[in-house]
Image (cartoon, rainbow over all chains, first blue to last red; front, side, top):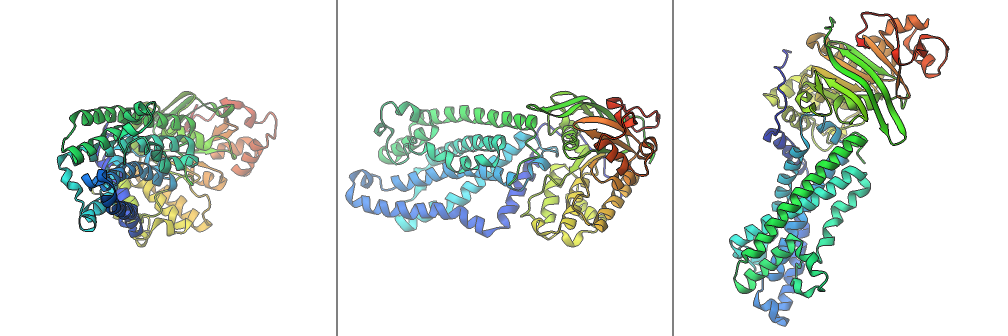
Length: 275
Length: 268
């Protein structure tokens, strides 16, 4: 066999390496139809549950009757946040479960390239999860979430990015504390659910809790969603606050992940991870 | 194999502490280009810790590691494309086929013509029938070939192997050693391996760094060590050192490990 050419130093950022990590996770999805079904399963269950609740409340609640899609839109948007978070943390956990972290980090892959790949995988997983439920909401419950128009894209993007931040923090903690922290990847996001005002206005919360709630991008998104559905108004102030908070939290979460990667290099954790 | 005087790797006063535990204590050595060097020692001697620091996966507490002239703490990405690694302590995704795994790593290493390169390495390692199989379903011998294929995918100038033949049957282990000899002869690559297997080290290595409790207790060419200790095999030398037998023997010379061997590919 002839020798390969000279090895060039690794570039600071390579989309090809990011693509390689995306490919790795797409291979996993492609090779496992149960995983694909599993991705779609829970959003569909949620759709049925909240669809029937909507049918009931349409007859018994003037609030829901006023905007019939509010509950289903809320649950689908919540699932965007949930799936986005899982898209990051589960893809990261895949590396831990398969004891692959040590291998990928002796390759020229940089930690922020892994983060970029995880973010793209999160988007793909979220679309696979929530897409079918969003489309089926129309024939099943006469709710067309895409009637939210361009604001839907803004809500989606904000919740996606917030999910990345939560997922990165959970992944960083798993990297630092090992598989003992695995449940954080699954459950951490639920801590934010009561504060996000998914199904009710933030004003319902106790006064002392409302500032905490407003510190979450998701609270601004769900308030913004209700403004569109009930008043037909896109609240730019809410959207701007969500974008600003997301920018802050994503920077902090990214920094936290990179710091924990540094700690993992100090403590020799990269070769020790696995089930 | 002809060896150049330029060291591929230089380890200087390297120390790694994990809290109270000192895994590696002030070790210094260099690895000559084109050599095969063994880090030899019992469990907990510091072999894997040293390999991890050579790869830049683990940060030293103090001291320095340079590979191809680059500081592995700060600039490891400049040289990682020229290196690769295999260890029983890491794995590749078990749900992916062998072909998928090698394709992913081919892209990670930025290879041109990944598909052709994967086919070539599979042919070379006689593992073409394995390409479509799920990695998690392979026997340990087959998996070893896959891990070796991954480690050689970028045809590294520096190959680091942690216990390369651990848990292999004698036939597969012999095949692996033969392949490493062929690879080094063909490419002039430098190999650093950590091993417990003395026969393997005697067969493959030009130089040995003996570690015990994180310190270098001796070093030199295998034949020189055997002669200096007045033993028949490297295994007997290893046992001497491991059991701290023979006070006043060369094994007790501490970090300096003087052997008087000017051709020693493990520099002091």
